[in-house]
Image 1 (cartoon, each protein chain N blue to C red):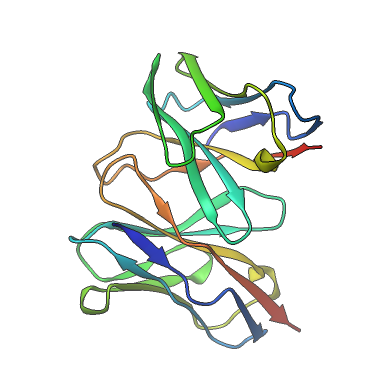
Image 2: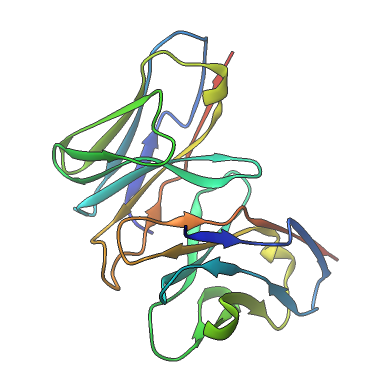
Amino acid sequence: AQSVTQPDIHITVSEGASLELRCNYSYGATPYLFWYVQSPGQGLQLLLKYFSGDTLVQGIKGFEAEFKRSQSSFNLRKPSVHWSDAAEYFCAVSPGTYKYIFGTGTRLKVLA
Amino acid sequence: DAGITQSPRHKVTETGTPVTLRCHQTENHRYMYWYRQDPGHGLRLIHYSYGVKDTDKGEVSDGYSVSRSKTEDFLLTLESATSSQTSVYFCAISATAGTDLNEQFFGPGTRLTVL
């Protein structure tokens, strides 16, 4: 069965530090991969997506993610975190149909 | 931002009462979805629609029904609300599915509390 794992429930980083949020998926082929961000009380906003091609994907707000087929991973990174990045981050996979499978989310806290 | 609105944004109701949540889009997208978000579970699909009057069940559809009589509106109904349906409900839309355009755009959510 398809699944998505975000192993870190909470992550705390200092402002200006680098960030990496982990996402691992289970799927027989290369799925469509997404990262969403949710600020408190808000809906989900798409940060970036991967369908094919270059495995390093650039997104909005200075985020990037790298698809590694051998590790079934799609980790989200940012070189320097800002206080406004504090939010919850969701990884999602889709086999290319209507169906999305979401991870359980990683809540990011940023220390001033 | 995609034109998606949800109403109401907050609702408190009592066990056993019917509740209808509305999702309205101005993007003319074919696909619409209802999810619920609960701590520790991420988002789980309740129902989805692939066209007017065309709907199907998601992974957590028990206790919910949906209707889509117009492209722009997708209604979620709890026929008899239970406390286990206390959650935040999100509507999403996508232009298509199965292609590189199947990214989903989300509404602002409805917080439902069933007492």
